[in-house]
Length: 380
Image (cartoon, rainbow, N blue to C red; front, side, top):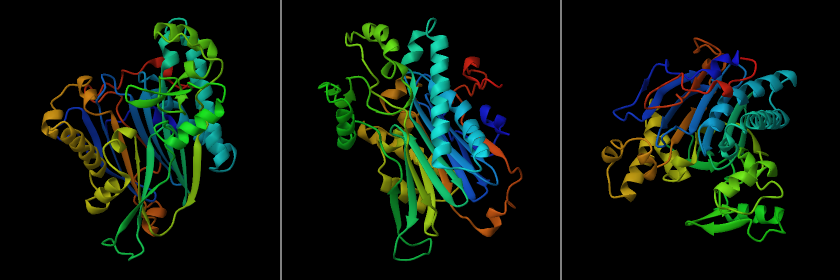
């Protein structure tokens, strides 16, 4: 059933770039409890962000995977995490915190296995990792699981009215595992009391061992398994081999019963939140038409990035991938509307009860065959 999640989607209606050849989007698509919109803009030479939405009558999954060091980890998660969620959910009779943890653990272990196999020929794969944000909705219950600094934000009606013209409140549902946050720095330091240099301020930001800002991820094996970091650290000029893991793949998970005042959810990689506040993003979604709303958020972020350089969006969109990373990051956005009306809950709006939308692996070329076959699920 989830085989469709393992094929990049370029065939959905509403797909286009709106004049920016590095931007892909799907305007609006129905799912069991409403509509959703998805968009991604590429800034890196290889798109390191991946995103996907799986819909069925019983559950909806949203995934945002923000890779670093290369695209391999985010692409790997795209092929593995949702199938594991579905497998463990079926085995245990439905979604739960335990199911989600098991799916994250299994994905991490599978990627570690790939790294062990590939390491002799491709040692750099040990330094590839990805943030991982997942939203899952089943029986009107929302689960949000997160590694890294991608973010989920809820837009809900304020207390001054229930109409669509009332106020909207932004509520952050995920935890940013980034040592720029003082609480996260403290957490990392407390876990390593014998290492006074576990977090250092370098190149204008706080970094773990002077290398990475996020404290949780899938991959980054060289920062989790000492046997993989010695050669890589020497290549980077860092003569301090690690004795134990300085990162983890343990997700933060929240569970929330959806309420009548809950209107929509925004899931996005940190490329969006670098330029838009939670409140600004929620206001944009609340005040604009649904169709193309994810693309509107991406463009709003790029506009803000352009303003910081005293440029226009029109100038930035002419810049080629790779060079464009100096102006903004890859950005992936999914907006999920929470209608939960009787017409949608019974699935009457859906032509196909099972569907999966996955962003292309390379926006510029839309080359669906680019993916390394070694990243496929072992049962393919």
